[in-house]
Image (cartoon, rainbow, N blue to C red; front, side, top):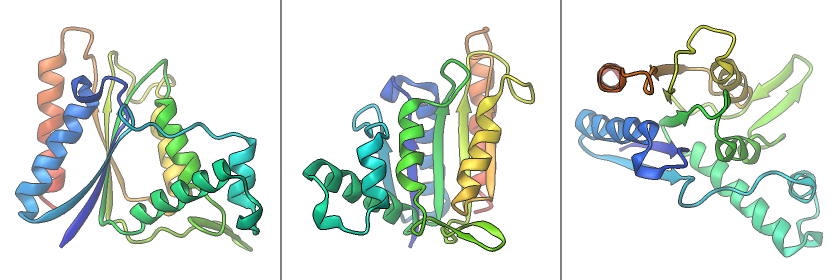
Length: 202
């Protein structure tokens, strides 16, 4: 059975346009595979704590027994999130643009899944991603303005770099832009159509 991890990072939960694109992706996945297991993370409902010094120390520690309760909780969550990535065939990310960047909760997820020796390692040839099982990553990016291909699009290259660092380099971006410029229905329709086309060749 195929398996997918879908991540919703809109602060508006089900009302967010990026969340609507993720929901469309889920429907397309079910249409394509019939029977597929979906793991869903909605950061508006269950946000991940931002990285701090104690959390980073827990991620680097070789003595788990010496960690505080809070550190052990953070380490357990990190292991769970990485385990999800290592168990799926597909990853769908819903990514709104807030003040020219990705949501801070999505950055927290990246901080929790990017761990040396677990999701990536350093070799004599440089860093090597250790998550090899994911066949395709789809990023559904929703923006109020038009930023694709401009210097103000800080999301695309960052996500390519961050995801590629842990081994996820087969990434396809779907952009729904000008959502606050009177183009919402057209942009969302085109983005949904593209998502369907991408999923149809999974």
